[in-house]
Length: 143
Figure: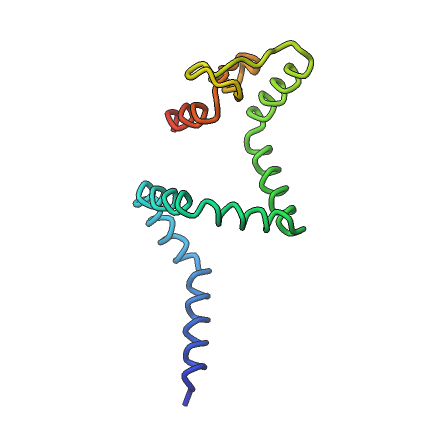
């Protein structure tokens, strides 16, 4: 007869196997697709309420060698997936350094600290200068 601890361990093992199974992955994808907006809203709300904790944990993780490797991998995957975007951003940065392009105030509010927004990545030097807030709003309109 199994002890309480052995039953508990066997249940955990069975749950772990299920979580790694293809069947569970399909169920999770279906659930996330169906409730994407609600899940996103809950996640954003949690991050806003716990932003200090999230930032502290990210700083701690990024300070480790494992964290640095994870960040590097994320960046490399982003660059491979978004090659045209990266090239456009690099062109703008090079043009700013060379003096061929000047950073302007935010088109919406006039803020001095701005980011370049590309309405069309095929024209890399044609950018709209927006502050971080309005840049995020502009990207949320596109989604």
